[in-house]
Length: 412
Image (tube, rainbow, N blue to C red; front, side, top):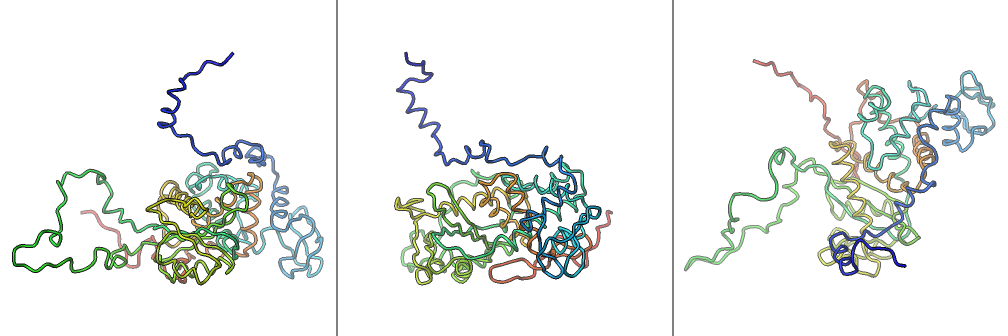
């Protein structure tokens, strides 16, 4: 006996046209499985301060019994002092903790609370704002802001490194510099200005007049017309070995323009000569044919894929995630720290199939493996990074605070 159908067989194709079925990639099935969850906030609440120290020791050194001395580098089962929760080196006799010479050195918060904040930050699909972390954990905004950026510093200096080999997809997208002040509070879409005017050079010339076109091509001097704070995000996504599993590694860079020099510097820094690069038909990628084993292009005005494996859809997908993070979560990313946020999105992309426990271990290991903080140590005391990290080389960045000579306006 057949089951009763809510839609007739004739109506089913019409439903498919109105509500197309999305291709399943297995991502939803993973997040609903037990493999996606290692532990949760309730498990972190049970951690004592000693257990938090041992957790970070295992994440940093791979063991809570045998580790290198941060002073002399000797690897041994050093003396553990339970009262201080530190180790004493068997070789040089100096004491060290799990956060010595790391970005968390001289921390004020308990390590158990640092782990809880890092756990909340790591589990955000498109990032977690510092204001939300402040409300969730009842800490000062400056404290949680610098903590989140120390995690990003670990990813920038320790995760977004190393060459890749295989099949890579590459693409660029504009970030910032969108002249938002000119567009704010103005309706978009239809306009009531009437029919657009035809340029004079396209009109039929008067009798006896000389036929001539525009003085300059329409896109002539396009770069000079761009806003000064416009930046380009370049991304390289390595295809996974298993079909349908998505990206296996991601590298990012921030540039001033999508020029041949910029994209070549990005590609040669992160891809081996045996790699295959796939990109769109932008002329800046033309030199890849002589630098790598193969270079394939896809014409986006015709198709997103040629049916033979040539596409850069994974790089385009990363651009969409980056835009959602920049415009939907963090809202106003300055150019100075744009590379840091891009590395965060790259890390979230590459660890999307990790459990919550392994994600926390991964981000903590990166943060503890890069040494002392170069950019956020003493941030609240005015010690700020002055450069923005560009593929062309670091350059001075304008701060967002009060400029020299600033004076408060006195109301009349």
